[in-house]
Length: 464
Image (tube, rainbow, N blue to C red; front, side):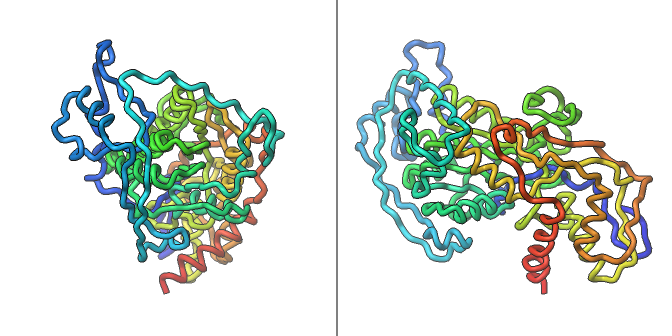
């Protein structure tokens, strides 16, 4: 932190520049242990007589229901001898309650979920669905019997991570477009790290579309202190949701949201999708990044082997309503907003910021990302992940001056150039999605005005 006579000081280089999809919960270390049924993870693939369980079923029985069946063949026989349907009691909040985050009232739904017979041989992989042509916007064609996403507004859409920056924006956008069956769950209602709970939820609710914006996130200190928590929790969330989407048999499309931290620390600028796995990652958040890379690869693998239409979007640095303004682990832009607001409220003479202000950064309003999510759900079914950025760069100095102006701070902005600047430039190459027809709409200053207004009305007012 810079020195000043009682002036607020902020180290931009210690802020986490990467966008994260906050689910609004902290997964304890105890929850980091994998929750998989080890009896289903067979190792005898080289043995011609080994039983291999097919993923073509809806419900996995609880372990106690299969007591006494320890051999793989016995377990398969037990499944096949079981009833053709299984009932589940699921406590869940009504959609109206879930949308406003309330979980006070709970209801019980009896869901009859068909259980398909287990196979003793692997099922042949299905061919991936063809990509929808970019000209098809909300229509049904003779070649494609299914309606496009935008023409299917009565379908059930599950948004995972709806309390975070990205998930909340996607939820708002879906509702504004007239989608009538969007549903969500809080972490208290559905812990996405628990495999059995996620499978039962998908089997009962049977969504047609899934937007996976849930993740365990944190700043540099949290990533360094709890690396096992970050990699385990995020791998569990992604694995459970993608696999349950396949198993339930109802999901037509899934979109996984990642982060620009998946790219190597020294990737050539602007960063193309092809830079993935081309060099070492930034060490300060590599655990989170590795999990996100695994999410991309899982979507690709499930598309190749099972024909699941799962796509991945990688956004640049994000900002907007519902951002994280915490003084210790917020990203650079919300951190600047908070610092200048507190300096203004305290009549501080200056705000000291580390570095020279010369590094270049790219920012995208989260509502533009929400539009990109809808666009990709409707228009894209490719194997490769897709970058989503604004394509515009701004120096940290220009950004700080703009935030100072929007907040209305009248004091001095002082740069402590004795402190390091960090990575000189970070820009995503978003030519792929822009070539398909999507363009960002919200200018940086316009977005900052809206974001500061939301901060004052929702963060500052809550402390009074």
